[in-house]
Length: 372
Ligand SMILES: [Zn+2]
Ligand SMILES: [Zn+2]
Image 1 (cartoon, rainbow, N blue to C red):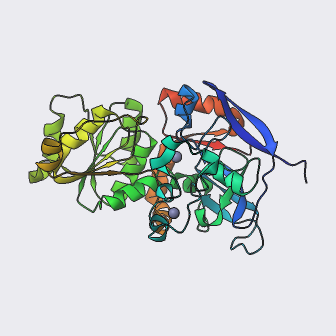
Image 2: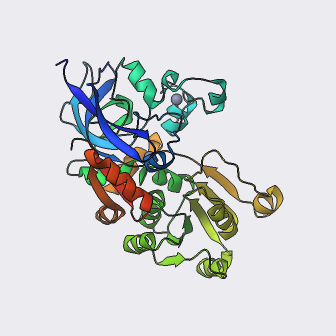
Image 3: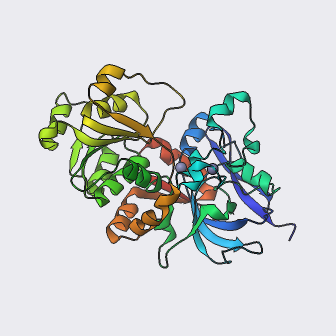
């Protein structure tokens, strides 16, 4: 079997995507090998454009979302070959307070966000994706945009019988992190929720808020994506450039003068300004988008204290939300909405074209199929 290979996606330079062959993964106890059916595209469109990588990515280590079928296990595994699964990202420590209280693996103390300037190498971060290859002494498999992926067993969940890969693949950065955002913001039936800066994460936030029977107000301008929002079931789309946009928000928020929750999905100051302005007193802003590591200014007195706003953000699905997320994704209306927001699907051999579509922004979520 030593000549078996793994097809892996690379972005060797800006604007270029191609596949290469690497050795088939080596797998140790505690991990499984998943043949990836769908690796959804996330931050890789930006990497394709700018060739700037997040700490865990590199030109031939790409992708963190995915669903597929287990093709190899180690003795003692609780999985079987043939199990259809979703892989959540990372390799959290399972020991820190984040892990043991069911919070998000991406925020595990095993990932030293506070210490990157100290020069820790990504492969030494065992909780990260490159660390997965190191832990397995493997030359491939830590990442999703590959035919075969190594996954820590605690980051793998079996799919309910009958759930298609196309629907399950929305469970990472589309419906997953936004499920957690809606939970953390305690969105309830009847709440007014602003979703601003609409890409696939915004669409995920919308599906989650509508599932909770909130009134969703979209702030957005891209007509292709506004049409998708209407198809998702959004009834209130406000052009944030319109002089009366804030009055329009207030008109939908009865006597509270603002939305209960705002979920900001772009990181753009333009939308952050409007989310803060559009919230009611005691409202909550949840950030699901970012532009690099740039800073953003707020007035502590006028924005936060006088109006008593709170603000949080995150990247990921909490452990404790996995069950509810999968139940939600079994809902027929949610599955219809996933079919709407998943606008494109390409063989991974055509990733170049997939990323070029991503750059046009005339798209929702784009899927890659690594086996093709
Ligand atoms: Zn941990
Ligand atoms: Zn993602």
